[in-house]
Image (cartoon, rainbow, N blue to C red):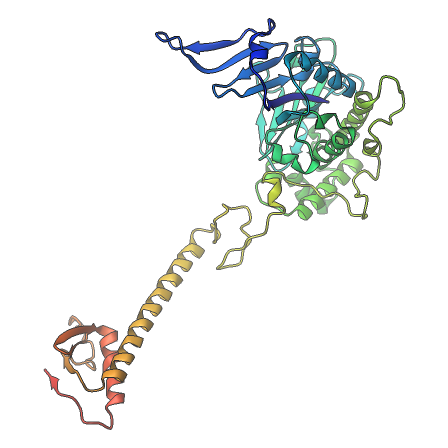
Length: 462
């Protein structure tokens, strides 16, 4: 089940590796001084041993291939085999309790010959997986043998293992979840290589991060329902969208809406398709899990009890409530929790799928332009208000202790074809001049006239 690993050894003495005859380190040196440049690396049975310049020791690669003496990782790799492989690492000074995990893989090799469905059919039937765009996976430098779905912390892979490992005896489909960042599993208490040998932690991880992803992945076998002829009229137009992989990810739909559409598609597949390829895949996974987790001395499926009830009619229900699991999207950081919905500040349209700093919708810039105009208008009002407060304070405090000079007639009406002139006033206070123009000057005059209505008018110079 566990395959690729990436571990860092804490407090490790690198001389143990340098003196090990099985490890032949390669490195670059400076031509004149013979100084070692970069990291030292050695390759042994599918694992890469790295000694960094600062002395850190790391091991990465396939522990499954290491267990198979470097042959391949296309065989069945049980839990007991994994424990055995970890114990073999002790010859390289690896202590599982101090081997810090930086990433690892969960994967199964499924023999699809019994169900008589080729690997390509399984792979091409995937419509949606964790909200990620489907990307071609290059197998032996050739496309068309697998797909990869990249999320923030995890990569989900579905590919033809028989083509990858050049195995001709059987059809092997690989279903894999690769945790590229450990924060994806930090809630399970898995930090070291030793934690992966804890059956309780591992079984819970398999259920939540591997099997649940299969439950939420949406499959549709195109060849079984090529046309909408048999589909009820009320579902015809909707069905055309549901079978399109781009439709599921083009908009940021809510989990509930996505789940509702998933149930509708599965209902139509159940009624009008001759087989359900997702159920077949889940049966294959269940059978392989039984073999992978079974103890060699026990023929009953009891080693990982939490996996027993996965592939049953009620497997999609939570243990506490009767609510069904809702199709998720793992394209954001797990620790961020549920993504909050966002709406355009102008028209109120939902914009959750836009950039994180978006405030307005992208409909032909109408809302953004409107928001800009409102902002300009608010700034003008604020500036005008501040200036008017200054004028009122000036009139109140100084009364008639200043001289006004009016340069134009504020009541003059604009004549057609004649260039208008602004109303301007000059206020002289203690020998210093202050200028006011346009609306500010008119406001000054109006307020000054109100103030001096019952008082002698000050001297006006024209």
